[in-house]
Amino acid sequence: MAPRRICIVTETYVPDVNGVANSLRQLIGALDPAEFRVQLIRTRPRSDWQPEVEEIWCTGMTIPMYPDLQIGLPCSGLIRQAWDRFQPEIIYIATEGPLGNSALKLALARQIPVLSAFHTNFHRYSSYYGLGWVKTLTLNWLRRFHNRTAATLVPSQEVADFLSASDFHNVHVLPHGVDCELFHPGHRSSGLRQQWGAGSDERVMLYVGRIAAEKNIPLAIEAYEQLKQQHAGLKLVMVGDGPLRQQIEVSHPDIIFAGIQTGEALARHFASADLFVFPSLTETFGLVTLEALASGIAVVAFDMAAAHLHIRTGHNGALAEPDNNAAFISAVDSLLQQDLLPVGQQARMTAEALSWESVAQQFGHQLEQHLALARQHSSRVSSSLV
Image (cartoon, rainbow, N blue to C red):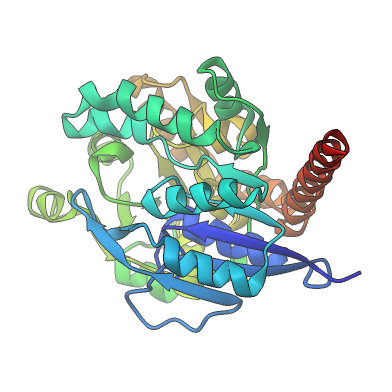
């Protein structure tokens, strides 16, 4: 049997540095080429990138709050030409922007089944930028978009429950995986720790992600400021970039900013730390949580998204009640007082059970299921016309 032809449409993809881009690349890479042939329609990459599958590049526009990301502009003509040549059997829309919307309209007109993904809590982000009044409008728009697709795939049951309660239809869980070969305790670097000024008996707290308001960065800093008085030599390393970085660098010169890191360099930063702190309250998943576990370091996070699924207090990290800052800081403190070696070993064991190959198999099952439903629908329509 010839491979199924699937077209994936996304506003963000590598070399962009974010969870959606990284997880989408891992998913595509884990699909069996004997079963699926992939065409990718995306915004034009803004740095050097060698495509690994067929890529169609569309024009993007920078987002004011996210200068490192783009919104894909509608490009129905380009999509039409690509589909005329590729003849996709099913469409997967990974982001809900104008590019995804133009693909959805064309797919519906051509009666091609469409699955969509819900990765980012845009409706929650708005409150961090003084735009809380648009929260309901945003959620309403997202609902209309996703309910025009055959199913919406989300990374956790928590998100599935929220969307189902908000009248989103046909919501299914497709979990994220983690690359346990790249993210590995073996990448721990004494040289990198020396750059940070961290001795062998001193602890390093690590944050990886966008340095922006919606990531609740001030809480990580508050935890560090409180606990460095009790834990001599404690360091806070922040990997990433964003609108708050310059302000924090000025007000907290003792915090170590490593900038954006990718690939093996990122893996070294994870493995060379002792404790990963993730104070975000806006995640639908939080892939960095799994990357920290795979790197063999303990995780402190709020009891939600990926942390809710995979972190067990006293086992591989510590959880705090959402929105309880004092509990979060207390969780960090409790781990800093422990021997973190066995906690890190348990973290690694947790990650080893989560492979992208398993996720890709689940994704393939979803595709086959909806292709079968589309064939049944087409057969019923044909019969009714006879």
